Amino acid sequence: MPQILDTTAQLVNHPALHNVVFDVKNMYGAKGDGTTDDTAAIQAAITATGWPTTPGTVLFPGGPSASYKITSAINIDGGGASSTPELHLISDGATLKTTTAGINMLNITNSIVSTTRVKVRGLYFNINAAATGVLLNNAELCEFTDCGFGGSYSTGVKITGTSTSNKFTGCEFANMARGIWLNGQAQYLGIVNCSFVEQLIGSPLNWIESDNGGNPADNVTIVGNSFRGTGATLPLIEILYGQHWTIAGNQFTNAEKESIWIGNDGSSRGHAITGNTFTLGKRHDIYINGGRENTIVGNVFGIRAGGVTSNTFADVRIANTFGGAAGSDNIVVGNRSLDTAAAITYVVEADAGCVNLIVQGNTGLAGFSAAGIYDGFYGTTPIAKPAAYTVTNPTTDRGLNVTADTLAQGLQVLGTLIADLQSLGLIG
Image (cartoon, rainbow, N blue to C red; front, side, top):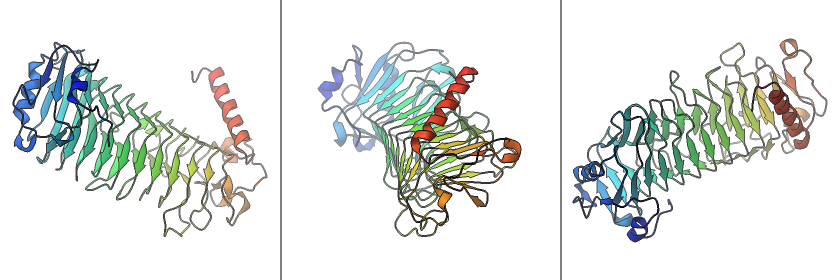
């Protein structure tokens, strides 16, 4: 469960709060009994703060036993302001509940891209309908800390417009159709130390998705989270459009489909996937479906789910689905597989059309049919180990560089590559 403050007194004395706290129950008549419609009372408390002109704090008291029912959206509208003061919505674990389909429970929006500064702490969104817990539209610098999102057939968070530098920390997403839907330019979004647990229920059944080609999500950071994939019908993290994501230090388990899917050629590229663990999956752990210029380093791929004995899938699959240079210029270095050939084909497998790959220092357990499949598989030919295959002409030599089977040497090559890019001024 999300971490919450223990008492209402702690909330009122919290340093983030301002001089006046607008209490939805004791000042504006919300019941919090799970039955009475509290929409008007909550909206009145938010309006009374004077935001977006003045800062304010709205308190949802009662702890985990309080359940505030709403039947329409709670609107937090920036009113066209380019920058607003902070608005805090704070609770010690109370629930905001709806059974009304199609609404955005908390609608944080502005007609222009704005520095919105809405801070939500300790609220649980019970979305028992085909509805959305939170909509962020043209919102910047919003933070959700120790919040929860759950409910069959629902979406936890939807981000639209140009919404920049928002952050979710220590939140829980459970028993829903989709966790966070990036349907706009969600730049510099942070998802940190959150848990995506229990079974996905409804449709489309994935945890994080970026799917707007005209307004992609760039520079997203996903660090230190746990993802459980029971019931998923889509990849747990699906990046159809977006560039330069960092996916690091996460745990993925029980994925029905791929854990991470990197999509279309040129539309999803430049991602860093490092230090993650994958266990009990049923398909490829990472699938690069035409994406380019991605770095996959230092991940651990655990054993397949029980009953998965067909070696149909690789730990890392790189596809040339769209032809041309699709799937090219990817780096897969220093990863470790703990499964055997009975359950996976290869640690790394790439189509023959994927050029300029660096596949190096990836290791697996014994039991494979070919000696070289610890490092990778290229087209229809296993890479011989320890013999080297060195790039001399990427256009004719197919761009594969496999020279060693040690993590140290693999990381040394990666360090040299980064230094070269820095000397050319291509990266900072």
